[in-house]
Length: 497
Image 1 (cartoon, rainbow, N blue to C red):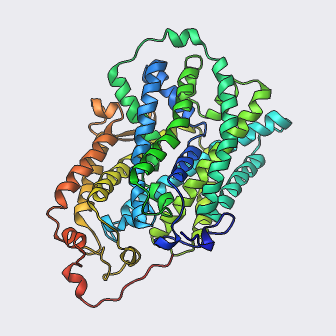
Image 2 (cartoon, rainbow, N blue to C red; image 1 turned 120 degrees about the horizontal axis):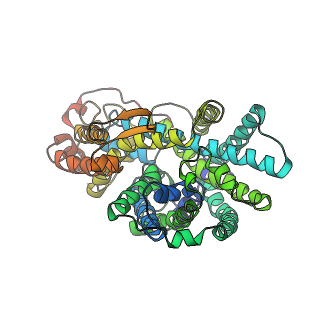
Image 3 (cartoon, rainbow, N blue to C red; image 1 turned 90 degrees about the vertical axis):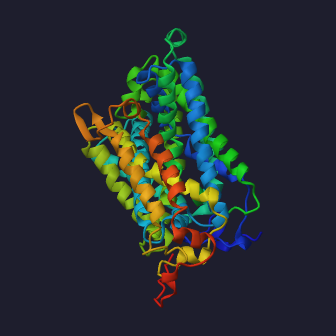
């Protein structure tokens, strides 16, 4: 297949959210392996592993099993949903118009954009901590307000350069940078393993099976679920002929390998440093365990791993912003996104007193609507035969995806109902005394063990599977017919991308 000029390494990708033509499709399933490997070699996996021991009472063997199931399983789901990108050639939230309607899709798209902004802010803040610590260790330069702002700008500048160039450059950098930063991480991991209190590890009590079940959910929610609504963004240039099973396997192994290693190491470290799971600055918490000569490669690896994750998130956020209706070029959308991220980084480092608390609270709240979307989108993907590329870009009444009033009510009702039920089981707080939101069922077994997101996903899927059978507009769209109301003359609004 021919490779278009805008999808070459080093060239600026000019395509926005419009579907990629078959003639410009190229690449192999292995690209998904490197995409998700790169996104998951950051040190944020260590506090997750520590939480399994400190908060859930698991021993190292149980934590390893939980890491395998949660990491591989959640990214297998990411790979499965990325099949939509290969099939339709468009970003995930653009394809979502075919499920929710061109107007109804605004809700899931806005939530997704907020989710991406949150992850980017976390990555940017953590990377700034790493760079500040590196300057201190290597050159003795102490942290101050001006230096903090400079470090944030350096990380954002690197992110903007990679994300701004676009898909081809991201795919190339993911692969080769994974070798470099993966090797640095491996050196640090081997050293940290030598500091583990193995006597405590081997004599740790066995946790309950229910704690393992909860742990799997916690790992899945903190890893793959956060990326589930972006997988199609990176598969849209792949040829249709690639089997979907290869995308699932490549995604699961690409993310699963580094995550299992990092989560397991975090579990080991928690035996000697139980406060790691709740550290306000996880970078510094781990850095204190290292001698100065080892801190330098560790901090470089931390910075690089976070950069690899962040440029993926920013790229997807730019596409999501365009889908939301902000009519700008993709490169400008990326620029607007990093401006918001910079403001978030300033808040977290210079104003907020707690770093990790707001992170967990943010994940808890956004997991509910995201998982409701995943449940609906997954059922549609299983039942759908194809996507209409022209209709995806038509946001007017003439669109095949107008449904009724621009909304596919079967999908919207299922999504909304699942969110309401999910929130019943949700409590979002930064501490015992700082509760942002608490649902009436949040202290039930399901709620207190963080499994509300599972209920949300399954309920959304079940309700949509039932309702779509009774929605005439969905049946008409599936058969290739347009709802009767669309026959009325009306100007078709074409979207800029």
